[in-house]
Length: 496
Image 1 (cartoon, rainbow, N blue to C red):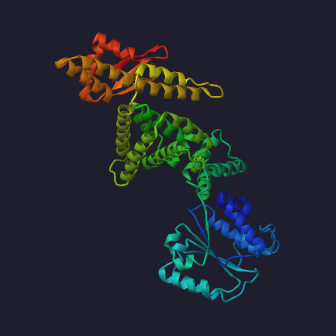
Image 2 (image 1 turned 60 degrees about the vertical axis):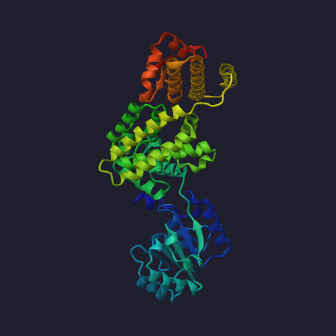
Image 3 (image 1 turned 120 degrees about the vertical axis):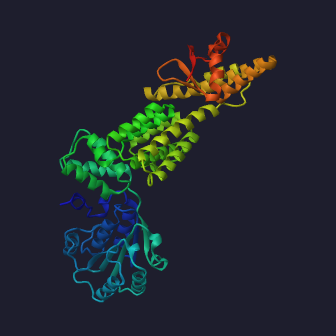
C-alpha cells in the first residue's frame, strides 16, 4: 500500500495544517447546518480531497462523535473503502465534458442507497468545459435535498462566477514546513526508517514539497523503498541544494568573495543540484531575509525554525537594500534560465553581478554629515559597547563585525576629509592631486580582510594608480593607517 493511502487522515483532527477549515466543518456537522455545495481551493496536496472525503463520511455517519465520523458504521466503512454507491468522485481533468455532467444529473434522480446524503466530489473542477459548467450550474440551481456537492480546485478564478456564488468557499493554505516535518518524522519512525541524518533529510523534503503534504510523503516513500539514508544521496536525487550551502553562498556574497561564491555553486552542481532549483532556493532565502528585516512575523517564512534562526543572525550583517539588489539579480537569472543554452552560465553571471553590486554598496554606503569626526567616532564607539550576557559566541562575533564594518566606513570618511583639508591648503598640481586622492577614497570600498588585521581597499580601475601611489608614499601611508587604529588594533591598509 502506498504511504499516502496508508497514512491518509480518516478524521478532521488528523488533517495536518488545515485546523481552521476542519473546525468549521466539524461545527456544521454537529449543528446539521450544511451547505448544498462546498468549494475547497488550495494547491495540490494541501488536503482538499481528503477533507472532502472526511466531510462526506461525517455527514453520512450514523454515530458521529463531536462532528467526527465514527469510522465503524456501514456508511463510514463503505466510504473509506471507496465502495459506497452514494459518494461519487469525479476527476474533471479527464471527465469534465457535458456528458459526464448529464450522467450526474441522471444519477441524482435516485435517492441514496445506504446513506443519508448522496455526495459528489468533483476534483479539479476548474477543468470542466464551458458547456459542462453551464450544465452543472443548472444542477446547482435546483438540487434535491439529499444531494451535496464538494468541489475541489487549484484555480477558482477559472470557474464560472455563477457557480462560485452558489458554493460555500474554503481556502486551504500551504502546509508549513514544521507541520510537514512533524508528520514525516512520525511516518518515518512508524516505517522503521531512522537514518542518522533523518532530521536533515525531512528538513529537505519539507522544503522541496512547497507546502504539499502529498508530495512530501511521496518523496519519503521513494527514499524508504530505495533504502537511501545518505544526506548527499538525497540532495543528489532531488536535484536541490541544502540550505546550509545556500547560506554559505549568501555569506560569501556578503563578504564580496567571488572565488568562494563560485566554488560553492560548483560544489552544488557536483552534488547533482539542478540550476533552477538552486536559484529558487536562493531566492527563497533572500525573501526570508527580507521578511526578517521588515520585522514581520517569521511565520510567513516556509523554513525550519533552525534555518530561520540562522537567517535571523545573518540579517544583522546585511543591509535591506543589499538584499533587494540580490533578489533582483537572481530573479532576472531565474527568468532567463528557461531558454538558456547554458543554465550554469546564467547562475555564474548572476553571482559575479552580485559581487560587483555588493562591492558598489561598499563604495556608496559612506555615512554623511559627520562633523568633528574623531570626537564623533569615539562617542559612537562608547555607545556601541555592548554587554555580551546571554549571547552565543557566534552572535557576539556577528555584532562585533557589524560594529567594525560601520566604524571602518566612518573612518573612511575621516580619511577623505583629512585629504580634502590638505588639498585646500595646496595650490596647482598638488591641489589637484590631493583632490583626486580624496575622490578615490570616497568612491572606493574599505573592507576588513577575513582572519587578519588588514583592511582592503576595493577600487575602480581608474582610481587604483592614485591609491597605489598614496600607499607607497611614506607620509600618506602613515596618514591612511593612522585613521584605521580601531579598538587598539593597528589595521594595515592595502589595495585589492
